[in-house]
Image (cartoon, rainbow, N blue to C red; front, top):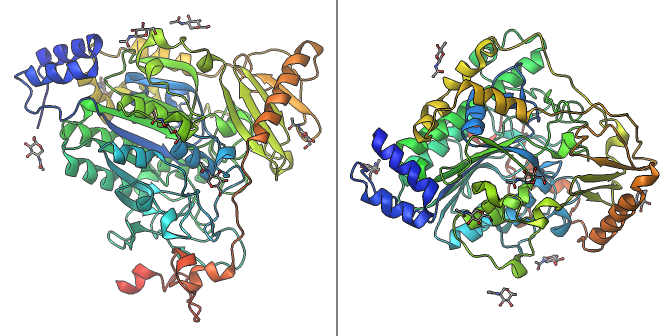
Length: 590
Ligand SMILES: *[C@@H]1O[C@H](CO)[C@@H](O)[C@H](O)[C@H]1NC(C)=O
Ligand SMILES: *[C@@H]1O[C@H](CO)[C@@H](O)[C@H](O)[C@H]1NC(C)=O
Ligand SMILES: *[C@@H]1O[C@H](CO)[C@@H](O)[C@H](O)[C@H]1NC(C)=O
Ligand SMILES: *[C@@H]1O[C@H](CO)[C@@H](O)[C@H](O)[C@H]1NC(C)=O
Ligand SMILES: *[C@@H]1O[C@H](CO)[C@@H](O)[C@H](O)[C@H]1NC(C)=O
Ligand SMILES: *[C@@H]1O[C@H](CO)[C@@H](O)[C@H](O)[C@H]1NC(C)=O
Ligand SMILES: *[C@@H]1O[C@H](CO)[C@@H](O)[C@H](O)[C@H]1NC(C)=O
């Protein structure tokens, strides 16, 4: 196994600080304590770990001690906390923005999600992220969830630039049986787990978070630093499974959180904990294969957590308002962190506003891949210079005063636009039932490890590994001050309510991240309000029609061998399969 001598570590650090990546390659190659030459330092390995439906406050680096996430926190403290990271409020639009670098209105995915029975997908005319990296010589891998359509084969990951996919095509599966029933009447349960285009039954019954992690480790070990790697580890965690058992985790994991009184929250904590361990295992695999020192590792959630209502998993977005699928900060502002040795300001909070659609141009820049922005018509912007170089953070006015179309759905009549620090909200989802602060931060049922938080983080796998890549030890004071800096300060200004169903709302989310003080009715903000309204209209004029299509009962797994399959390309069977507990593809074959 490769290990660093202090001398090589120091040299490496100097190289990282002083030289551009090409020189770094030469230096590493010249260092005789190095056993392997970095294969192509200009093309870093990129590992994006995506959580599904994780609450904003369900990582512990913002101050929660209810249950700790020591690996994710260690990634954040050794790397950079993405303080103002935004994403669309719900799965399909969020993943569409990640893949295309565009707002959902510019891909027709702005309304709700692709429910499994629906015959549509992300339009194939977009050049998407894995295609760009595949063309540039990357090995491109998706492990886990896709959720951008599978009704036709051409919608699925291996037709869209992924060399390899291991996981599921639809919105969710359960944690042990890999099947899902849509919350729509008259559709049966269906199995949804594939290796590329083949139904995958291996390791049936293994807990999904562990299974996906193991596959990610396998891919990393198989790569062994021979080819630039793009790995999107798109977890099921911490989305709910099926309605009969929405929250699932191994019993021994749940037992660790016995001090949490609410049994659902206890299970959720266990699900988060397994996800946290996954981050440690991935980092460990990257180190063992000597890939870590040329890697960019990102962790983030796809959208805010659903605390209540459909798919509720007990997530907490405290102290932000709202939740998944709402236009409020609790829907669109997500937990995230990045680590890479090419970042010069490691161990700091990254303050600029960031969007999930920024990863495409940002990571392309990191990998030195030229993009034709006319052709791609990106809404995302390249933040690589800002992420890696502190003095470049303020350089672009576009970065400072940037716009994000959080919501523009003319079926549900919701618009939410951010421009600089201003946020405009008009209309809301679920008739406003999820518009308020929906959770609180637990102060009593807390993680025993929280009594020495610094030791807990220090004892994580991620700390043990990243410590070797850090010039200066991350101290207790640094951890505590980063944790304090990442805490959300709601401010205690005057509260002015707003009912977005009958009026427009305007907030300054820099000073009022909890969206308590509606400025829309105050005359001095009139011109800002008018400006925001105008921008919404302008964006609306550029929106594509929604691509959503209704499902048909013939698409039910009951007519397709109990599978969620590319149903538009195969005739439905005459026979109706009984797709309950028995009769699922893997159960009959075993
Ligand atoms: C992709 O196809 C859709 C639907 O036909 C169309 O509206 C959109 O403009 C196309 N986009 C591009 C980039 O060609
Ligand atoms: C991985 O690469 C290293 C260095 O090139 C080599 O020593 C090792 O045998 C490789 N491992 C595998 C499993 O191929
Ligand atoms: C970018 O794409 C446009 C439209 O396809 C094309 O006209 C232009 O030549 C391309 N630019 C470069 C630099 O390749
Ligand atoms: C960037 O701008 C912010 C606010 O405009 C300022 O507080 C900060 O000091 C600036 N940072 C740098 C590195 O210039
Ligand atoms: C960092 O950004 C500053 C300001 O844009 C620039 O002058 C400098 O060259 C950058 N440094 C590196 C190493 O890219
Ligand atoms: C790990 O935890 C123990 C207490 O259980 C503590 O004494 C030790 O300092 C911790 N290690 C690190 C590296 O923080
Ligand atoms: C705000 O919502 C109302 C009601 O849906 C709508 O008539 C109006 O056009 C919206 N304004 C903007 C700028 O979207």
